[in-house]
Length: 177
Image (cartoon, rainbow, N blue to C red; front, top):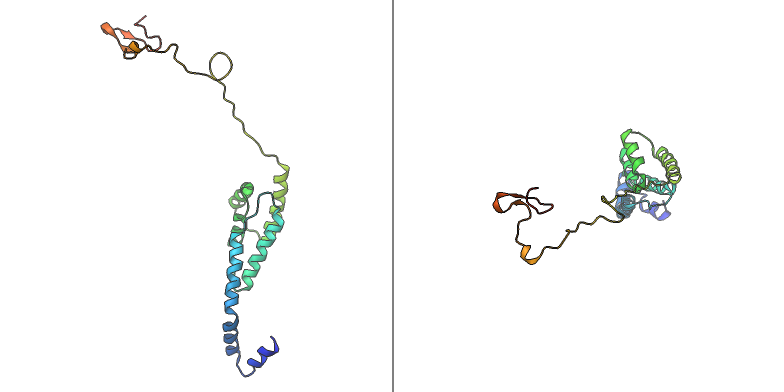
């Protein structure tokens, strides 16, 4: 406490001092709590960045948040850090959640460093599907009619029952063989 504050509070009891100090400094603490929570909840690790510095920064925000008097549950702390990771860590997150691991933040940091090394070692797998055209010859399969219909044939039935009750085949357009 500075000497000026001590002089102001010489004749007050402990409760009155606490109330007076809260009135003086509570607005600053509220603003700082807002800024820390904003930084904590909006933090996202960029793709390709190292996990260590990012998680240490997040732990610093969590600890600062707690010193301001607003503790965060241990499970929520881990969830906040896991949610700040990029999509490349999705298999790690799924494994972590499926095994219902209970780890401290420093243990999580060490696990993420190991996972980061594994991600760098493994090469991404590219799945390529090749579709082959059915039919003879090379190139793309094309579906064109064998001949273009003439103007007077446009309204003739190509399949179904033709003249005289005979069946006309769709593919060749001729009556029953």
